[in-house]
Amino acid sequence: MNVICLAIVTDALVTRVSADRRRFEAWRKPEPGELYHLSQEEFKRAKALVEQEGISVVTHPGELTPDDAAGPRAIISAEGADFLEDKIERVDEAFTLYQLRHLQLTHYRKACGLRGNKAAGPVAYRAGQAPDQPRPIDLCRSCTRDSGHGRRDRRVA
Image (tube, rainbow, N blue to C red; front, side, top):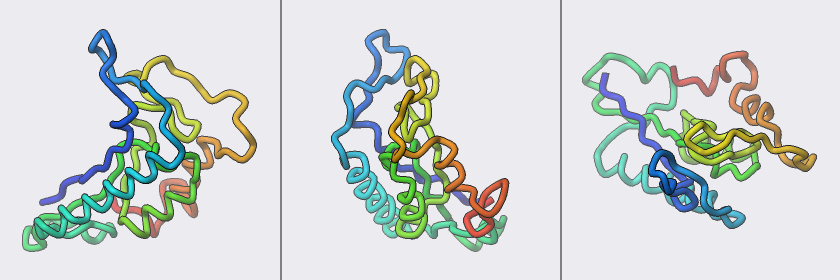
């Protein structure tokens, strides 16, 4: 099989290596819209790279075959849900406009009410979040509507 995951990363501007050089940490709060804007640029860069290299983008499970004649393929992914900026509808936007098929919910920052991983620093939940902000379960449900294991029309593998 000839498939790669081509990932965008949107938290690089707001994270850094910790002073003890043992983990990455969030060092500043992003400006409103900053990470979303960066995601659009990153998705465009991924699209340009795919076109330049003649790689097809996997959007359906049937495209994952051991057929080498299909040539190199890529699954568009995002390392972290930071670019959603608490707007769950952006999952649908990225799916439709940018062919996003793999979304790693956390990376080095706490995003969309989700806690970051151990490398992000102390584990913390968003306490007392405003009613208009999505809960982590809402984000997961938006990715898995219609099925307990992912939307049938959204599954790649």
